[in-house]
Image 1 (cartoon, rainbow, N blue to C red):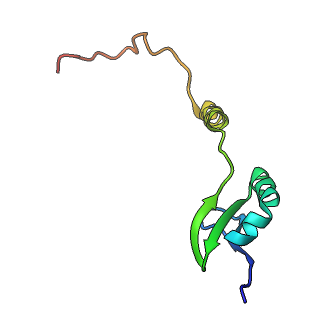
Image 2: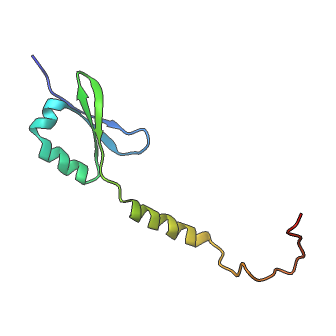
Image 3: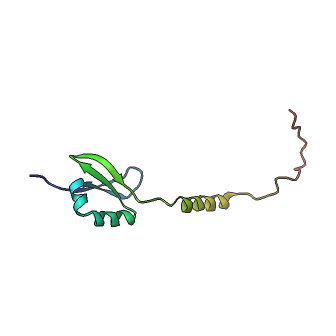
Length: 93
């Protein structure tokens, strides 16, 4: 007798639950699991108790870069970097 299961655990790098799904269960209910991944969930695919794959949502690298730039703008000091600052320095040292 073969028992299929879905086990929920927590991802080590986030506080979101990660489903652990047997490959047979995944095949039988693929549209449901794909919809879950599209919402942001992660799924681990298991064969005989061993994780063989992880299905994760696509990352929007451009959006992440814009968010990092917005965060940098909060702390950035904008000024004139070409004008002299009044200190003498020697570029030949």
